Length: 283
Image 1: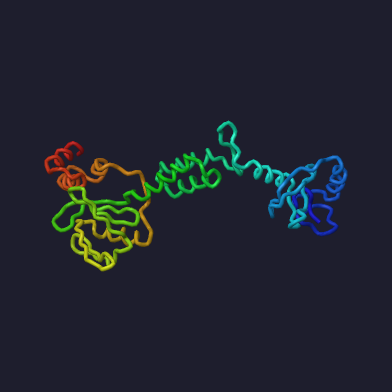
Image 2 (image 1 turned 120 degrees about the horizontal axis):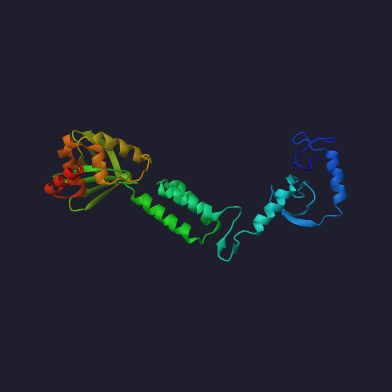
């Protein structure tokens, strides 16, 4: 036997429910008295999903298909939610399967603005699960995928041979950019045998390995650690990017203005004169 209030299975002959304290005898009397007065309404079993007809005056009942006890109100709500899925009224989105899609979009945008892209993508996909034609969610997914591909996790001045430039770490790739803005992209999957040397690091690259050396003064150990973690799928936490100017103000001072000018020149690809002028304005 089952409690007709909460659905808990009870030993035969019980007078009270051990979970909610409901009088089992009184519930049976009330249900027997009301059965002939109440009409049957559609419901859906909360356990097996079978479509049922239930007495709305009852508090709990037993599913004839899976033999599980269920709360009548919950079963009725389960049916109504299923019946009203994907309903739109005058172009206004309402709850679909119990989910407020407008709220999901709001949460997704909040995470996107905080550069928490995985969480944002999860919320956008939840919207698409219930409304596959939602343009806001589709646009959001495109933005997130593009942002994940192009987000710069780390960058610093670097040089290859006698050519100065900068080195960037993006998702699944290492990018060297020379003074002319030309990019050389290294797929992380093909980077092997990372080694540190004075003032830089080297690695073997490609299916037929070739040795690549990159000079990055005072940054080689940091780069080796970053690349080693990226090869394992571990990246620094994303944050709102700061400008080169903000970085210089934060990390340099008048005593290190020469280093700051060199940094600015390499990162921005400007002349020494322009770099010195800019640093004098900043520091």
